[in-house]
Length: 216
Image (cartoon, rainbow, N blue to C red; front, top):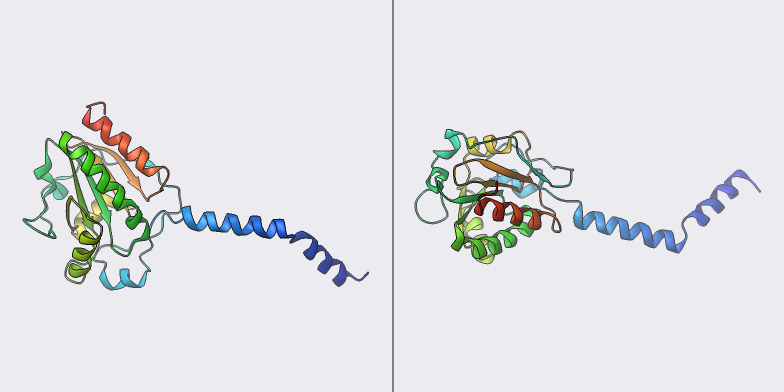
């Protein structure tokens, strides 16, 4: 048997129906769970993003924090809101606050926001506030964000982060979504970069409960 025939025979033997099915399953799972954050090279992001370029975060999303308190430049910034008065994070002193950086074109953001809606509905009576800050250009994305808020029944305040606020909060981890759990006294307790449908809702809920109970 020639070397070419031996090689062809080995390839046919290796790619059995079982191995083909297994490879397809692995690729499917990677597609479902691997895209934990968004890449700013998305065409709509190029048109509408006002913030520094958002890059893919390949790591599995996990709680983390390096910023201990919100800087005054973030607390005092007045940010455009979808409705009502401008959003100012400093106005939420005395409340447990979740700040979420997101965009309408971001797939993982679309998966996370229904979890934030449920979280707010359950814990708002206990003192939780949620603020969603789009990283898109507020003028270019105004209609899209308003429609998104309506379609997803976003029951908390939504607006647009200024470039300075987005840059400060991201701390050089330029991926979205990013969520921050902030205590009643203004401490940044936990930061989530990216979204994992299995892990993030559980960890985020636990962080909120502990903050409301004064355990962290």
